[in-house]
Length: 253
Length: 191
Image (tube, rainbow over the protein chains, first blue to last red):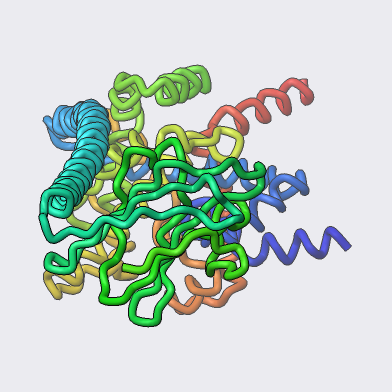
């Protein structure tokens, strides 16, 4: 069986083609397998190699003078060129990495500085706006308090909050109104006072009154002709709309 | 070429020592030049081929596997393939037909003969032309026996027998000790 296979293989000239290097990669694999597997093929290949060398030597021609030197010079230059190229390539790569690293460092540094700058600018803007607002508020308070046309209303709480005392300042000419809540009765922990104003039929939430903080402070009331202010007792944290039965004081101005 | 020298060259090649190329050239340069010339049939082109082949040999030196081929077989393959590539590009460049003309194999080059190579040339003459033709078709032109038969217009059976005889003649020349030894042994036996 194998003998037939070997005979067919040896008759195919594939070994000879392999010998002189004119086989394809696939054929190479096949031939190399036969050489590895069958001593007969291996032996034939060995003999063919010897024959080839002997036959080629018979055709030797003296190579021209200087060709050896040219070849050696060529190989040396390729060798050195390669080495030099590798050296340049390494140097260039290192430089690239350093440059990229530095670029990234400066970029991120710049980025964070820009962010910081933005934050600082925002803070300044907010402060400016706050200041302007407060200044306007203070000015209005001054106008209201100093103006002879300002009416002063003393407000007292109803029976639900007898201790409540507040003063409202209303100036119909300047259309400004303020309230100062000077005394509030104590409430259970889970309740608070909230101020409201009914302006043009709409109920506006003026916020929760914190006694300590609001004692010496004038709170602006939205102005309208025939507006009504209310103070109510609401659950802690304030309510979205006033609880009518818990009204403790109302201010008509 | 001793196996020891071969081993030494292979070691140098694997160490990427340039000395390997120098040794290769000294030992195989003329033979490979002859091989290149046999394929391209132009000494100037053959010089280019030899130079390119040595550059390839140097570059591929780490791919040489001594278990797969003898050093010379490897060198021959590179040189022959480089020569064939050169011939193809020269053909397309000049449009001139520098083909491997089978009739050329009959005119064996006698130029650039070196005295020290005279003996091998004389040896070559010892092989009858008809055997040489078949050997050349096989070794240099890479023809299959069938192709040689078609190309040379010789029956396949004749090609096969000529190849066999040619190889035997060849063996006699490069390995002359064998028949002499046989003769001596035979004589001894007779005595």
